[in-house]
Image (cartoon, rainbow, N blue to C red; front, top):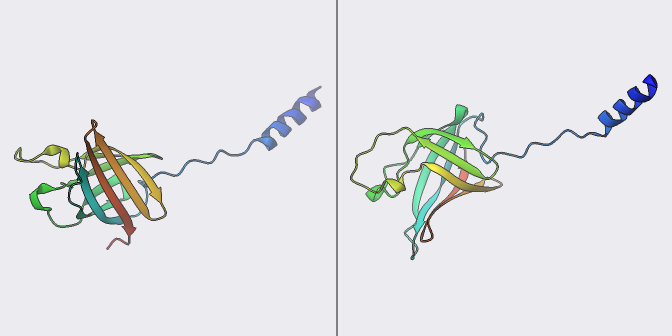
Length: 141
C-alpha cells in the first residue's frame, strides 16, 4: 500500500507542469530603458499628437527624459510605477502649481498593451476623453 501511495505521488508530480508566469508590460527590475513616442488626448475631437520621452529604470522608477512640453501637454514628472500584464500604474512624486489641468499629468492606472518593443498606454475619463501614449523602447543613454 505504501509503495502504491509513493507511486501515485510521483505520477502526480511528474504530470504537473510548472505554471508559466505572464509577462509584465515593463519589468520593474530591468536596467533602465528609454521610451519615445507620442501623446494624444482625444475628446469629441482628436487632440494634437506631441512627442514624448521618458525613462524607466531598475526598482520601478520613471522620469521625464525630454524637454518641457508646450502648455504642459502632457506633464511627465518623476516617481515610480507598478506593472501588470495589462496595466501600468504611475505614482507621481513631483510637486506642481495649480495653474494647469492636472489630468494631463502621467499618473494613475493606464491600460497597457505590448507588442515587441512597442507599448500603448490608454486612460479613459468618462465617455468623452481618452489619453493615449504610443511608445517605443529604445536604448537608454
